[in-house]
Amino acid sequence: MNILIVNTTLHTGGASIAAGRLAEALRGAGCEVRMLTRGNRPRQRLKFVWERLEALYHNGFDYPNVFSIDHGGCGTDITQLPDFEWADVVHLHWVNQAMLSMDGLERLVLRCKERQKRLVWTLHDAWPALGVCHLPEECQRWKTGCGECPKLKSSVLTRMLPLCGRSANDISRRVFQRKQRIFRQGGIAFVACSRYLADMVRRSPLMQGQHVTDIANPLDTDFFSPCGTGDEKDGLRKRLSLPLGKTILLFVAYNINDANKGFGIFAEAVRRLIARHPQFREELCVVAVGKNATAHRECCECEMIPFEYVADRGTMRDIFRASDIFNMASMMENLPNTIVEAKACGLPVVATAVGGIGQMVSHGTDGYLVPPADSEAFCQALEDIILHPRRQDFAIAARKDATETYSTAKVAQRYMELYRRTP
Image 1 (cartoon, rainbow, N blue to C red):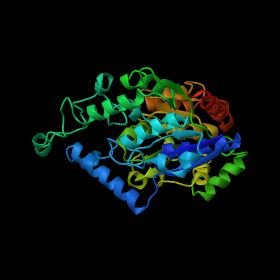
Image 2: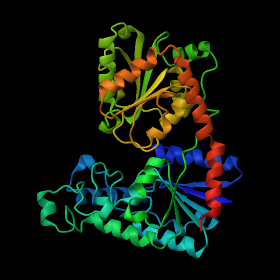
Image 3: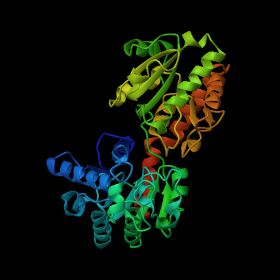
Image 4: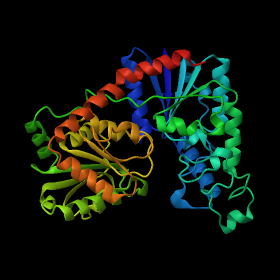
């Protein structure tokens, strides 16, 4: 079986990591797999810049939020590529930001039906079920077809120009209706990475009559695995310039400044914990991984060691192995790769009960779930794990769930079954 995996980027972001891991898993199951990305050639870059300028126009020139919407204005017609002719299965992942336009998507659906190729779309966010945004946040307009989108900010210019800004028939409504016409032609099998996302997108009018299932992202649980001995862990800490003898609290985000990731909530929880147990000032160390981590070096009232964005998976695995507790304080998430990676390396998890995280962490068994934006609850969960007389039981349970649920062989088998029955 020849499978073409399509994703905007090859190495950047959670979707590209998940797509690459699936490619490896499918190859291990005996499939021929190719990866198709947008690339970085001048023409592709020009399309990307042009589409972002269009997005800027439509969101009222709100530059800080220019990446919060995607209207599918530019992209590559992948049906004209040799890779398309080669494929038995075309498997889309995250295809925004000038990878696949709405015109290109419609041609892809029609050509797959004509050539009897199977078309699968793994959702790493909710964009296929919404108008132009990736996550609905507090907005409920997607349930009735979008329009008057709160992300299309009004300005003097947008009020003067009828083609953008808020209106009942704004770009969010028009893109929604275009998707509706495309999806009605059938032939797409939609896959959400979590039960939470699958349940959410099924409520969209765009998904009525569509095949929607959920399959977790795969992980090589042989590569992401715990340290064999305490001496090995100490060796990793020395190599990474991390302290010996301290409990390391790990926080990972692509960008630490992203308010959605909740680093401020986590830092406040650590400060509360130290106020409650002053000895923890010397016994704890926070390790923060992500862009702008260095700027937060003084915020936790205990030793804090920053790593700017880590792209090398071997280094990231070593950081997991050298740590003790993984922390995630996000306001919204789908099915974060980092939680699975941490659990596979034997780390208990403290995380907010949002999105798909609730299916990833078994409360009281391999970690704790806390309400979002609640630093006191986060502090209490950290205290419970740090002082637990059998903390190692959390680590054992975390590793067991990761291997039983997310191993590459199990995920590849589920996708193979889906490919065979997709029309």
